[in-house]
Image (tube, rainbow, N blue to C red):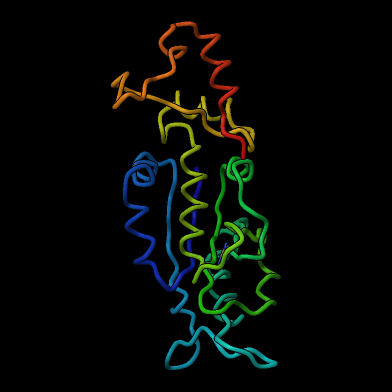
Length: 214
Ligand code: ADE
């Protein structure tokens, strides 16, 4: 069983995706659980403020430590073993091998927003993860990508056969091979004949030779 608790200001941006298709199926089957914590609930003062201006000057607002620590501690009070993931453009670049390494357990994903976060927040983070060398407005899209890529690998989410196939074919660099379905001839583009040969050995070799390399 894998559980993700997402700390965010924008639950409404995440929930529709997690209630759709495979992510929904995973929760319905009891294979994954998604929970939300509203960072605003831990905000400071009458406005429940979660951010402030940077020391030393500069544009924008940074997430403050107090609300973030309080939100994470509220989750850890119930489950001290939960690990904290922070999506950040300066993290380790996410890949298939990392997705496979996350199996059972409880993961808290902290979604920063605004221009960034107070550096001291890193002291309660276990994994800093980047989705690539570009900057997004917040951690919500990275959180969905991390969750999707982990949950689809759980046996029983995609269907046993397919996930077994993914396991044997993807070692992190070696991703999917080209696939075809009917019709055989679509506007003059035909299916490679080897795939119709019935020769499983040759088909496996062809697939391996044509696997996309990252
Ligand atoms: N937050 C903003 N940009 C990001 C990125 N590229 N990866 C992860 N988190 C981010």
